[in-house]
Length: 112
Image (cartoon, rainbow, N blue to C red; front, side):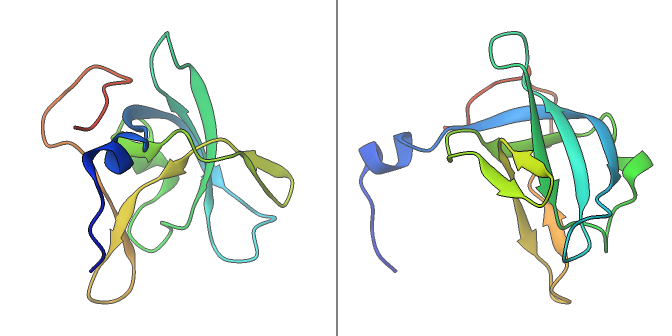
């Protein structure tokens, strides 16, 4: 495994947000949801495409805290311009489980 410096790690803006809207992303090539995530008043709402359809339903996602990378370049995914990358881990079956804080933290809080 390649080691990185603290400065390398600090370049990644991992922030907490709350899913405020989730819907099936019909135009996606692989099953996905379109998410709108609120990162608080300073960072605002960001859109994302998330391939998390195996473990979550859209109605279960609304109101959940998630961790996302905010400083990747925007990426066009079909008709959606993705503005952040919601993070997760593949489970033993290869399905993505969200990376989430286990306690409430303010929206926009940075992972350190």
